[in-house]
Image (tube, rainbow, N blue to C red; front, side):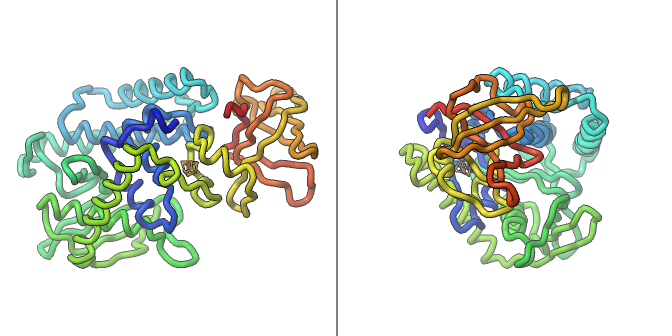
Length: 369
Ligand code: SF4
């Protein structure tokens, strides 16, 4: 993997805000989540295929901002692009990363996202008062405001910017949990702070406040960022990006990869990450972090035909375990007597010989190391 890793040509605000607020960030994940690696190493855990929607939406938004998206029918364009990405996943040997584009949920989601894109495009087309730069008119307030810094190497999309005579308010809408036991998630505050820093660096306006809203639209957090904080944020970003670039150039996987229960728990790259595969099968993680197991496949059974589930018997350290797996999430090259990795499973608390799969994303792959 490390030989094919490239220095990112672009970073995303969301990715760097998590790295800057983590005690022991995995910089390899940052690299894998950033282009061009994001598109090269697209083999991901099942369930993460929905990330494709986000990435297609993000790139279409950027193209609208820079006037490069000419297609009239945005829904068809989005569909085609998602299908192309899925086909690429399949070509790379991950037939399980599928999305049913005909399901009601998919149709609703595509329409919802394309409405936002349509609004953005018509606003950019019709609002003659918007300031311009070399790529055309620039939207600096309202929904979906695009910001960038470090000569375009860092980009982000602000959900909403409100303007008043005293300055602007930068708002991020979250659909998931904003609060933890210790308060607001630090990475969310950092994300807003980075948006504010980039917004000011671009010379748009002074940022009066940053706000987090939950899915009901209620304000959960707000604050006025200090100028020193914004300046420090720019320095931190520069240092982090330089450090990552340097480590990738050196191919220093030891310093980049930080496999741990917390870091790898929701990482979509676990299937292909050698650092994770080499270390984590010998560690046991506490709930809610799922585990990686390494064993030998002893048997495959289909307990109830047409349920889409298979039952596996696996030998791990001379003990036999049973585990269910979604049929399409069992890698097609796996055969009896193979050494296999069992990704995102828990030891059952009641039965000592049962491994329980994480419902929304688990996988079984052949050990090739
Ligand atoms: S699996 Fe773990 S070590 Fe590998 S990239 Fe993801 S977080 Fe980093």
